[in-house]
Length: 197
Image (cartoon, rainbow, N blue to C red; front, top):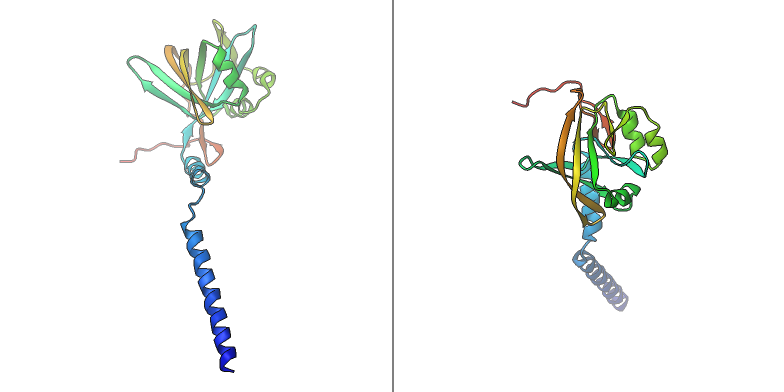
């Protein structure tokens, strides 16, 4: 009986030791940081409210395209410089590499449909929608709140996206409606804006 207990005790001790080693090894193994951070970043960004823009480029008689984005910002007011980001695998990325000019359309809350359509890949469907006109060779949406007409300066490739820099050459303001927003993976509008203080 004593031998049996000792054997059982040794087996249990070995089992516990093995589990401890496995636990330590598991804890010491680094989590896949990129995948973990990517997931957390997507979650964080989806909870951030962003304005919606449509970037358009090309010409009336040649290839043209438009894409809905939220990754846009002013870089400098003097001189007037902006940048936007676009997935480098998109059809628009291929076009913007060849184009010298483009327009940034500031979308308002009555333009949800065109924002949805321009987030997809059917170019013909995008330009079948009403509201497209041309300034020189640049297609743009006349009914947008504001339109920035830009000359492309340079493009940087960063990760999955292209960062496109532009010099603003002209600004048109057509409307002052509430901006269309993107929040928690859905289009949204602000019914009423009040100051925080």
